[in-house]
Image (cartoon, rainbow, N blue to C red; front, side, top):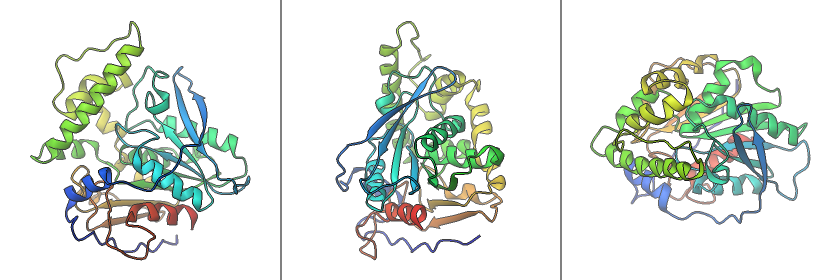
Amino acid sequence: MPTLIIPEFIPHPVLKGGHAQTLAGTYLPGSKFVYSATQHRLDLPDGDALILHDDQPETWNNGDRVVLMMHGLAGCYESPYMIRIAGKLNSAGARVFRMDHRDCGAGAGLAVQPYNAGRSDDALAALKEVIRLCPNSPVAIVGFSLSANIVLKLLGEDPSILPPELDRGMAVNPPIDLLHSVKALDLPLGRLYDRHFMGLLIAQVMQRNLRLDGKHFEFPRKPRRLMEFDDWYTAPLSGYGNATNYYARCSASQFIPNIGLKTLVITSGDDPLVPADQFENVKLPPSVQLHIARSGGHMGYMSKNGNDPDRRWLDWRVVDWVMH
């Protein structure tokens, strides 16, 4: 299967190292993209609902490219990378659906169950809704971080159920070994990210408690680590029992060898949240192209001036893959 030539990522000279790249990618301002999406509510079989944000360029016609994008942990349709990349894909002529996971973003209050790294059923439901809204169009699915694991799990767990309109997938910095990734947060600098996510996730649970009268969730004590959070909240409420079982059943590494759809995986060798060495023992099928940049951090990829229109190297790799 033909591969895409990926230009080398050369970090900005003052943003060297995984931590600098991760923080810069998150906090430095990006291009403006005025929100003008149409919101679609997607009701799920278990009674929960999702929101899809439909960014349709004026020049788009039925049969043109469509993209489903899915955000990472504690994110939503307003996450900066979702906004930037949707805008760039729109400019390239693609219609983009930004998906809010359960109880995230505009979907707050529409779900009882939490989202998690194994929600490939939600991704499939969203794909089918996108195809219903855009018949005859080729569809790409792009997942970031936690959702990148979901995308790879979806593509490999049962390829026979994938819609024929889906012609390519992309996974950015995927934690394909969830336990290995969580353990990386136990390293001294990793604990800073752990505490950051804990603050965001606990706040989400508290907001959920305010919305769901009579269905409050109480932690045994305030979780100090992501694994504690998953053990007490994500896993049991999602039907996995405990974090160990959740990680084992949902890690995409076990499904990647079965992927037959054209798929690009991009990650970095200095990602402080998702170690690149998790790919060492994974058998990649011919359909999967893996690119491990020497640097870039976790979804940072702030580059030196090069051939791209701006320094957001990752954004242009998504556009290249989706539109080529």
